[in-house]
Image (cartoon, rainbow, N blue to C red; front, side, top):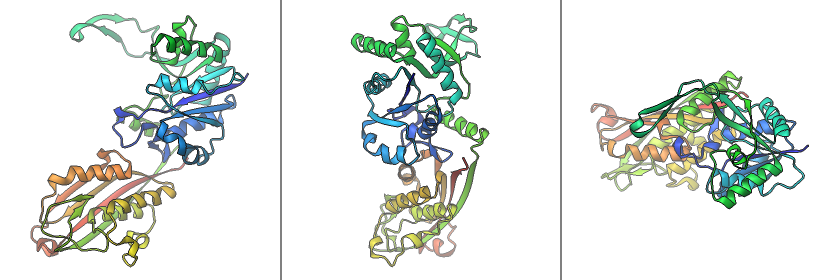
Length: 392
């Protein structure tokens, strides 16, 4: 019997509040989706994989994900639909009749094991449909109006449903056809099978088989990755930059143009904040400094935006196998006040580095009228950055 896996990864992860879709967030330096796909790639019982992605991501996925990480079992990459059920349906439509069992698994459950995949497939071969899940550990309360408890539900027969879920192909196709014609959505694939009268076998899963949906889930995932031997190599870098004030120049800091009677002197846009962060990131990755990569003797960098330089630095350290954990910077100047512009600076940096805004911190200090900063001759920035490289 041949088995195909559908991995729906068509969502955007709004609840996570990250700068990118949750399936692409880095876990131990590797996208969450890739961790998931690798388990199915290595599972002998899986013959092929169908990956469902947001429509805009489909054209580049073969190069950026499949080829890069050696995921040869991914035969088809399909555009997702409005809802998860629509995405799975699109994946189903690409399956030929040569497959007997279909396994469906959430892209953002990276701690699935080959053992679980084997168990759920074996159960589906016998019963027609099976789902991984765990027994409820907490007391379950049913509430009604105003959140008042109406009943305490005995938990001994209650399961928290997970994926993978596996089905005989003909049964799943019938369930999805019925749902499409009836215009109803289920909370999972197994519920669609139940709707047409199929019996679903529950397979004891693992409490570690978490779905990464919230920021707290990502923290837990990092801890689980470390526990499982995917130790993360944290490295820190320090950056410093200073510039003179100059008349006739725009004052740009953190990618924000700040109204002021002077700007900063420099070959580029002289964004000292972003330059210091660039140096901190390059230093952490042992990649030299900003002057080595973007020399002020090169006309190509004349008036270049600090945002562009930061984007390029991000690519440089990613090639070395690092992902960015957080950055922290202190801006030292007498005036103007930074507070009205700090939030936009944080947003610009987070968006460029593709990290959450909570991973970016900017502080401002005066120099108490001492030194070149105190005399309003210029400003300085100190920055630190932490990057991660996986040992797995």
